[in-house]
Image (tube, rainbow over all chains, first blue to last red; front, side):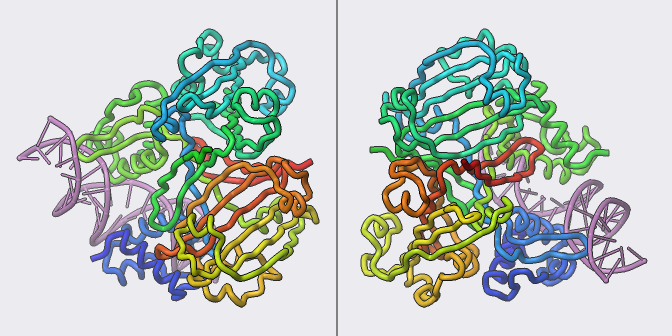
Length: 243
Length: 243
DNA sequence: CAGTGGTCTAGACCACAGC
DNA sequence: CTGTGGTCTAGACCACTGA
């Protein structure tokens, strides 16, 4: 008797063994179910996972096809910086560097499609691991979308931890890039001006309205690491190679 | 009547509406199925997706719990550079800069846990978009694992496209970081020495053996962008903000 | 030991898109 | 219009694990 895992593994085996070649069609669910001696639902579940893994494509009436090129996709867990630091066995410390309220800068208005009248809470925060600067957080919060952010102090915990409880199911656009440290970043992170820093920018929407924008600058040498593969069930880790 | 989508949406609604708070237990599948008027399997499918989305946790006998903090996870499609460039409407060009065969450098032996005797094919390739340098690829291929790589020319297409067909179901460790351009990178990518560049490093294993290691240097200003959210079904895009 | 989720079955109806 | 996958049902058995 076959479980959906056995079926999935067998199909991967037949594809990697070139029994079923890229682009070719594989038998339909009814035939597969017969040949594996299972119910169609079991085959369906196996196939659904193969679709999710980017190995096959399915179209009603047309059938199931081996992808010409398997999709390479990683699932990245975006860590809460506190957890990331503590999981690395370091002590976490948080410092609020700067806080103000005012209009959004023009580039941010454009980026978030905000009216120019909107008020934002601007925060700069530093997250430290064992006393060393780990991540610099430049944060803007739309006070029209999150009025409670006007009076919250943010002196004990960072806005990320607070916001994720306020807006747990937001739409997010995230981007990863590299940038040179300016004077502020260099000063806060204890690196030289011009050093290459890993940077994450994230903008968050709730019911179509921009809630917050954040730019995270990581310490020099930071890496975001993850594994993937046929068996690997999206175990993802963020580690830091320092020194 | 409710589909698994309706049930999933309703559960998210009840969590975000604070009917079910973080950490609390929600009713079991039988009760939920009764209350929604569906079969247990339908509720089960909805709950399975909520687990996958990082919104709830389930344990046999214990029950289903709202996560204290919802998991933030992105699914990133790692693009084939050719497709990425062509999808941006640019023309793709590939240049093989350098090719040699020899032992792995020491740092690579250590990193991949290779015996020091192993022979590697070393390639340097440049991928261009509309004639401008887009990505520099430094690639090492383990000839013990992939003997066919010894004689393949790699003068028309890059090793990535070739390898993905040779080893479609590998285990991969990928990391994202920032680094300063050295003389070689600056020369190939047409930037200044010291410029901050976005970098991907990827090592690939097949049946426990290291197959290849690659270091991808992206042009200055490159971003890897993705969206996620409750509705967003892992649409992922890599874009380039240039200039 | 008993309650929970995990999986499977045999069957059904349906949506969709090729033919 | 028909073959395919997508979903749902009612029921069953089982694995795990917490009480």
